[in-house]
Length: 232
Image: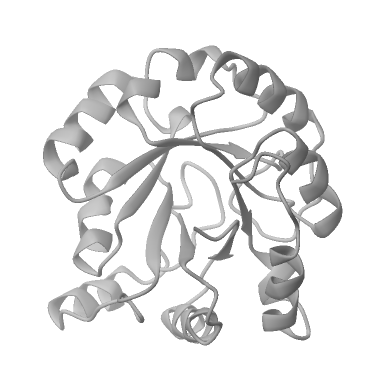
């Protein structure tokens, strides 16, 4: 499985289409993350929350995400209605859902309901903000396949600087739970990737470092040259 997961935070359906076609044109891309922001859990709202009627039309047309034969799509649900909005993305072909621990006041009920509704079709991950306590994760690790640490202080926006506070959180978590796959999303650059990999991070979610590069394919290839000392 690829170390690098390209990410898109779509401003429109056209923007999403263009970036997914771009990622699909890179033969070594095997996973893509689509960031979904509702404008309430965090802001500003991204597509499709910025154009719900258009999204409903796409669902009615039964369109699918591109290159499903070789790309696994994961949806980072930065929204308060994640438990319900997830179903639309599964209809489009997504197979991985990342829920944010802070988006609900009853995480146990939330994960149980999601597992009951979607558990046979999807892998679950749980994301944690930098300011949040690691203890939030402890009783829920058996309910998810991976943990996603956010590498920026304000989520929902690409192009922010890496917040090094996440390194200590990952170090503590990895010491406690070395068997749990960890990915990091936000602020990932070639420079910040190195200490993350040294801590045993399994996957690097990269947005602006790829999509805003003058040559996105070359930028992705540069990230792919990075090696994890843990062999993942």
